[in-house]
Amino acid sequence: MTPAPAGPSRGVRRISLDAAGIALSALLCEARNGAPRATVVAVHGAGMSAGYFDGQALPDLSLLALGARLGFTVLAVDRPGYGQSAGPLPDGQGLTEQAATLAAALRDYRSRFRTGAGVFLLAHSFGGKVALLTAAGHATPDLLGVEVSGCGHRYAPDAPSGAEAARGGRRSWGPLNLYPPTTFVTSGSIISPVPAREQADMGRWPTLFKDVAGRVRVPVRFTFAEHETWWRHDPEALAELRSRLSAVPRLCVDRQPGAGHNISLGYAARSYHLRCLGFLEDCLLAADPALQPIVSTGPVTVSPRPCEA
Image (cartoon, rainbow, N blue to C red):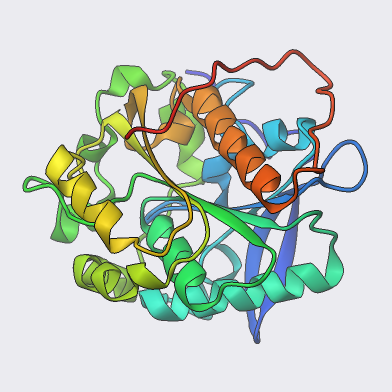
């Protein structure tokens, strides 16, 4: 069996953020060509950690490395109760507290690092809930948009729940052949216990989303994996999702083929990350048409796909 790599991808370093007195660990990969065009803030799901966005099973899975090559800085934050804050916050935090803590951490980051044209939240699963709450209640003028994968607003009837959800069992990953075989070796270092307060808040999301969705006022893109088992993404559910996000200036819904719930760890990771960064490009153009993309340092191609109607 292939051993797990010794550390993060080349150019990725560990930093600590001061979130109003709470120390949050994070992985940072700064833009390779000087000042970043924008900063991608990646927010992981339940039972994972910031390393979720620095996949090691294949060379091109890492969002952090890819974003830096394309002129963006990527910051992947360990949410409250994970990484450096696991000791001080053994039970973690509830959803609304996590949004406030993430906003505080980003204030600290902005005070010490260049962010370029602004911040783009890219979040997975439970992290998607935190990102949407942050956009709804703690939005700043430089928030460019939000990308959410592995998260909807209505759970599927057979979604894992209770202890199974807290364990993050592989049933929720989708077909295991969608992931490189070494995923289940290299992912050992990024899997973490789900804090108790976070687990207790999982069932609150449908009601909480209904209450706050109308306050999100930046572009949002939802991506559902082809083999997503946690969330409803049928036409009826998507129509309701759109109706709730009534103040969003641009709402896109996409489906990632050949992917299970943990898209950023599977074979489809590179394709998915490129589509996310493509949406960020759209957000940059909407903010300022003069913000032109840089020339890539390597061959990167992606076929444009329209948002689902």
